[in-house]
Image (tube, rainbow, N blue to C red; front, side, top):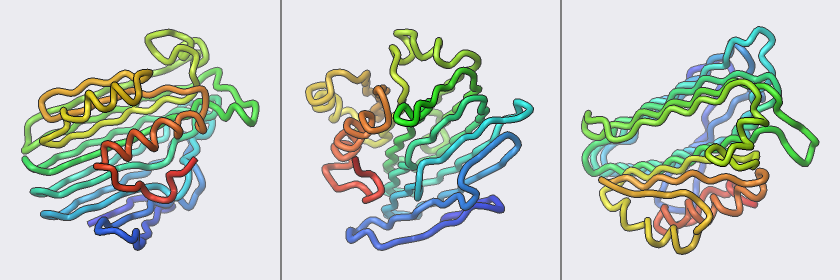
Length: 242
């Protein structure tokens, strides 16, 4: 079951050429600005296999009064269901405000791969983000028990914040990758061997990674092979290409 709750959202289910169903998320408004609301509800039934991608990068435009655009994502996975949640990058423009909340509830043997990325201004277009407000909250439960929570907050002088070594060390593209699966830990050594520059960890049925890069192109050069590895070597959606 897939739902998009917004006057400007749509869903398209396409043939992927594999046993995995592919759903393309479409924001027909072309972007979000202060006061906008967008919500997605995904429910994968027992043994279902689904990939959710977006038709294009989401654009988060300037908020005139500082009110955030609000995005909510609700994911439910039944027993042995598999979901790849991989929307394309969100591009943040100067003066934007975004509050996003992702909640997922997995059955004990379900599998969830999440790839979410932010681009702080398009370098090729000469764009910079001097001020923005970003709050990105993830809450993931397995069989009703909390297994992962993340709360990213960046507000104010974004350029200065991104320069910090503990944030992005000057990079302008940032992604979080999470795999929640019974065998998630087995990927850690492989990832650290093939991608030594990224920060990664794995424990208790979870694999987590933060990836930063100079720009969107460089970020995809890492994200595509990383996500392919975490997806068991299976090819990703065609929208994910360099």
